Amino acid sequence: MAERKNTEFDRPGGYATPRGATQIQRESAAEMPAADIRLLGDEVAPHVPAKTAVEPAHHSDDPDTRLYVGDCRDVIPNLPDHGQVDLVFADPPFNWDVPYDEWSDGMPRAEYERFTFDWLDVCVDALAPNGSIWVNIPDDTAAEIVMHLKRRGLTMINWCAWHFRFGQHRDSSFIMSKVHALYFAKDADNRIWNPDSILEQSDRASIYNDARTQAKDRNAGMRVPMDVWYGPYWGRVQGNNKERRAQHHNQIPEVYLERIILACSNEGGLVLDPFCGSGTTSTVAKAWNRRSITTEFGAGNAESAWERISEIGMLRKGLSSGGSSAIGKPRSKKRS
Image (cartoon, rainbow, N blue to C red; front, top):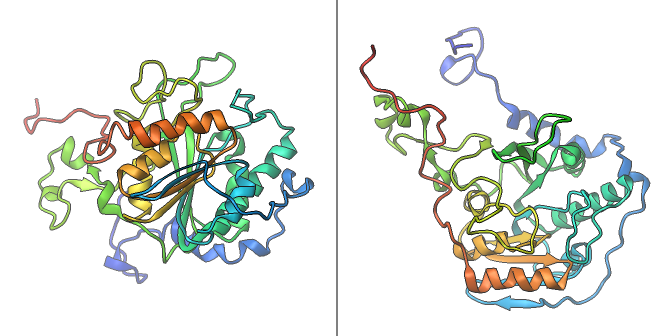
């Protein structure tokens, strides 16, 4: 429905536009912790973190980059930087029986949910007051994570989707071609947010060459990306993709982490990833001069990830922004 002027209420510019989801989320965030939200994982006793000094298995300076080997639920509460983390990015095990190094990826559902709530809790507690958390998760656990973060009092900023064209074939249902990227902040009104660092061409500019968008005083022809992410270099990292790390599963493309790190942290800021995997988060953070901490359960995976973080580095720096995600082709001014 087209926007229209309306003089019956007082809104900026007089246009009949809604307040928006983020504003509603802000208003409800303070009330959610008091709600009696019960989930299956609540039936299992929480993990009690060990109280002990922790030392990184791998460490480099300039910027400070650390990789700890162990259970993130024990490592993170004992970090010297606890409460100072600007950004958490988590791509946890999906409980799909993937053969990760040393980790058992086939828990009973209630235990998996309890595990999920436990690692979320230690990450939330590690955040600075203006920090944010992103979680990469498929359909079957997205709702539980959203509800748990809401009952922890965080505000949902976006529920994004990473879309890829090469989902695994199946004929029993529609092919999965997305994973959810859940973005929550401790304080929606006081969070690190750098929209100018992640701009892409707008459809008005790339398809229609609209003079109005090119005449803007700032960021002519550009916009903040929409909440469905796709395009060149955004596909699943597999096969002969040069980012591929042979012994790792379910890699996330560098451009995905680049967008999040640039948008939600500042240069010199601290980024935390509780599930190191192939090391994408710290690799991208290091390339953009962010400090980072990551944990990995298996020593073998950690060794491989550290090789990437410290020796190989980021391969597609700067390719997450500036381009166009338009589906349509550019149109000529002449019409037949």
